[in-house]
Length: 560
Image (cartoon, rainbow, N blue to C red; front, side):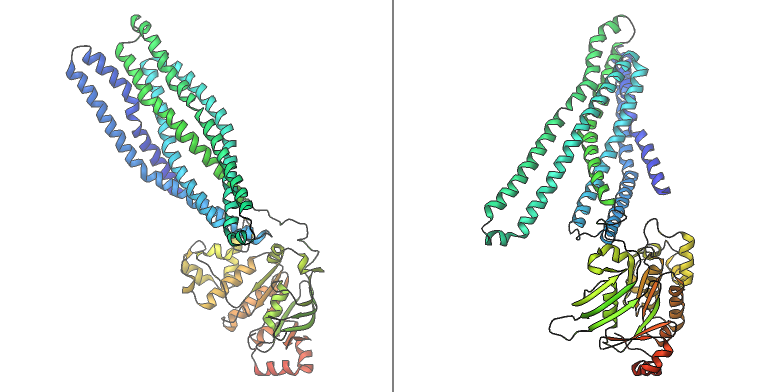
């Protein structure tokens, strides 16, 4: 923010220098005529004209220097906008149960680039217009106050006209933009299904659909153009009427000795060289570009606004107990089921461990519990409701399944840890406590603090990546956590510390065990073998499950 403020201050300072030629133009032309050419002193007249030329060079230097701070401001706006829109699209994908918006990236790229270009053009022109109009008014007040008053009234009237026209034009431009998007969507659907269109003999139908969208978009564009042409009246009222008033009042003003002929010339210079170009810029650039920019920002704002809860009313359930009833699941119709007629109940807030030999179905069980896989037969219920009845967004927020492969993305430590936490995210104190809880202090310090950037996630060790993901899930609001060998790359001390943190965390915890130590920490154990489950405490299973006794005796647990 400090850098942005400095860039804005620099831009305003150079804009003042850029406005110097406009401020001095009328006064220098008046002096050149009155003190020079009309007084018979051509050298003095040429000297004043030379001073005006020097002022133009000074203004050109100001224009050149303003580019760098202007670019800093515009790029900062673009970066913030991209971050907002991309974050919103990610939140929408996680929180809202809708199909993936495949056009989001293209739309974001196109519209944010349009915003960047429009913002640059708007700032470049708007500041020139503002400083030029102010310079003209100040110059006229000092030179011919009577014309200055007429000019200010004319500017006020032209401003009202511009606002009224712009309001209607904004509505028509929004309609035009919607028509353009509808045309793009209609044409895209036809192109994607082009083979089907020909195969079904639907060419004429497709032609009518796309043609109607083209006609609608063309009509909307023509309506925008017709209304935009009416804004030329703003230039006539704001700049030409004061000039006409100057010419009509000139004989009386000169005869009365109120003004000199040079001051009349200076007034005309202010109006023609300073005011009229500024008003043309308002109409042609500021009004048009500002209007388009406003509509674009409103449309992007619609994408940035993400509902906090998905629609449909079926998202919430009374509690988060998990239940499998006679579940059978296989990865293909030609293979043996991985899980067969499995029944299981996990109460809300319960902590249990799952173990078994490789290929026994532990990871499959985790996917079924999380709602990622749907059973071929039987049912999976969460809080008494069938998984099929619950929307996917609610499932994603309610059940956090942490796999063996830990995903860390390029970004700050804070962004990685807060990824599953709804806005406004964890406070600094909470973040610091979790970093210490999971033993991440050294990694965070090495990265430059919580706002330090993890530029290359692959440079982290597998254990460090697992700890980051575990801390991320710990900070989430998910009441059900399933750790599918999510600590396999940690040493026993780090694993114990992480599991103890989740045991103390409110909610349900299911641990697909990598080590026997994880099993011993759980009051309830499930032993999975060939799609069936033996269920009990550690001591109970030692007495009645030969497989469990064998696994405990070996002191290890094979991966699923």
